[in-house]
Structure formats: C-alpha cells, structure tokens
Image (cartoon, rainbow, N blue to C red; front, side, top):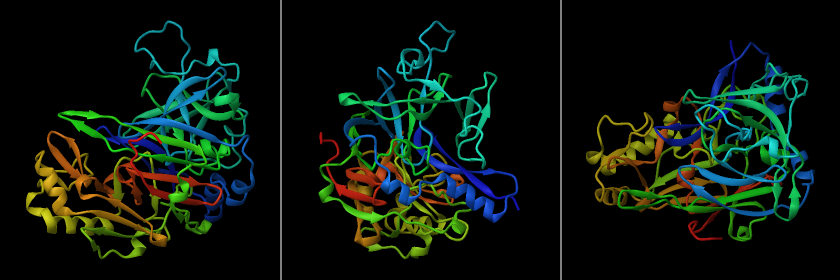
Length: 434
C-alpha cells in the first residue's frame, strides 16, 4: 500500500486565501521509516524550550488584512522591506527575488528582493544537507539545478507552482538586531506580489530557525463602504505581547509517532476542539470528530493562512443541519461558493437579518476556552450580493482535517507560545492600534 505524505501549501478558492495540506504519493516505506521521516520534520518540545534566541524578541508591526495577513519584514543587509503572508500552516518562508536590471516583460513585483544589494545574501549549493537530506523530506522537495544550486518546487492546491532557489539571508530588526542567516526560498519568476512567512512547527519555519519563543496577531474585521471593501490594519508581535495577561490558553496536542500517517500533519498547531454551539444550542457532535483517528483524519488546527473554517463531514453535516433548520427556506439552492461553501444566501440588507436568525456561533475548546462569532458577522459577502456562512466541508478541498481559519479568529488576539506549547486567545478590537 502506498503511504501518503504531506506538502503544506498556500492557495485560494476563487480569490479567497487558504493554506492546507494535500497528499503526495511516495514510494513504499515501512511504518518505522515513515514515522522517522515525519518526526524528523517537527520541532521537538525539549529543544524548542531550551534553545536561546539570538536576542530578546520585542518586535511589533502592523499588517494588512486582505483575506490573508500580509506582514512586512526587513530582510537583508541593508534591509529591504518584503511583503509576506503570515501562514501558520506552512513551513518554508520564501520571497520574490530579482536583480534590478532590464528584463523582458512581465516585470517583477515592485516590492521584490534584490540579492545584489545585500551583503548577507548567499545561495545554498546542491551539496548542502538540506538539499540532499539523509531521509527524504517530502514537505520540501528539492533538486539540483543547472548551476549546481539547491532548487525547490511547491505545487499548490490550486495547481499553481512556486519554485526557486534555497538561499540564506538575515532579517534585520530595529536597533540593528539581526537573526542568524536563515534558509529561505528565493522565487525568481514574477508571480504573486507577496511571499510566504512560514510559521508552523517545522524545523525550517521562520520561528524555528530564528528561535522565536512566541508570536501573536490580531485580525481586524473588514469594513464595507458601499460596494468598496476597506482592507484594515491588524497588529503582529514577535516575542512578548503586552496584552497576554488577558489571554486564555489551551495546550497544543501531542501524539505518538504511530499516529502521524497518512493524513496527520505533525507540523501543524493541533488543538482540542470539543464542540460547536449555534444560537446557544450545542450541536450533537462527538468530540472524537475533532481528534485525529489512527490515520490522522479529524485533526483540528489553527491556521492563519486559511481564510475560512473547514470541517470534516461528520461535524459539517451537523452545522449545516442546524443552519437549514433556522433559515433553510432562504438558502440559495444548488450553489456552492468555490465548490466548498454551500450555506449561502442572496440579498444585501437581508443578510443581517439572516445572520441574526442563525444566531451567535461558538467554537468550544479544552479548558472552557471559547471563540465567539457574533451573529452580525456570521456571514461573509463573497460577491454579487451573495453571503455565505464562512464554513466549508473539508472533503471538498481534498483534506481530512478541521481547520480554524482567520475569518473566525477576527477580533481576537491569537498567541502561539512555543516555549510552553500552547495557544492563547484574547478578545480585542483588532482595528485599533495596539
């Protein structure tokens, strides 16, 4: 039987952003070999707790929210500001690179990185252990290019390809504090204006390489003015968040190596979701639906790179059943936005009334921690006067996980405490400067 391993990826549904894991068929491996591969990718708790960062991180930055969290980081020496999507579902960080010289169209993104201007930039040769690992790393497929440089290729869920060379580069923070040289991807072809800031638990993620003890963000609510959507500004912290005393924490879940296949993602922020309430009524969903089974299906993860929330069929069916019971006669029949969201409605002003008829939604976690989504923002406008409940069926995306997307993290601080292996939530008005 062919085992399935995972590539974490960032993609979109009809312009809506999300990151997810999708299966990559590999050669036959023994159970022991498969467990060794997957466990080698993750950051082990002891080393993550004891490793000292190069300096005390105390970095605060605004980010632009436009279905994704777009942060700006100062990369290189001297630093060049780079726009990157903050993605807790991805490992490899990559930026758009080019040299500022005449080239045929299409032109590179205006914000792309020019390696020739940085004294700390270097490429990774094919001989580097990352490029030729002792154990194949299926989350980071690498090859040797014609220049004997280490080349990576990512196929995203929407069929697009991101590729380039692996390089080393520093990130320079205020007061001339710099990270050690970090391994990044350097995409040479024009494409998306933003790169990816990989923030999961993989050994090559930004937080693992830079030894960031904790980070947090606050996702603001997008506002509409007539037909125009206003992209608001949120806040991102590396290091201590001054508001953390108000946070409520849940532990990251850990699992035996034997449970890390074929659908399980060991690099994700896996949490204990215990239930869902709609309009004050707790849905009849077994807690087992939110926990990975022997094959990894049912894992629940917090993902900043996914816009919407996706649930496995057993949970989604109960959510949809309750929505149909409350407002089913007004539901748009035979319609599924992006092939994934099928609880949708026509009408502009009527959407407010529909949302209030559905009621507040609550995601319940361990330790009685909750995320409350107010009934006035239970629906998202997806265009053309259509509004949808911002929850889709995971299987429609070809995944078998429960994913809490950034839509349902709005107006909450979300802190990832790597030192204590926990995630914290705190209610906030994220549109305010904090």
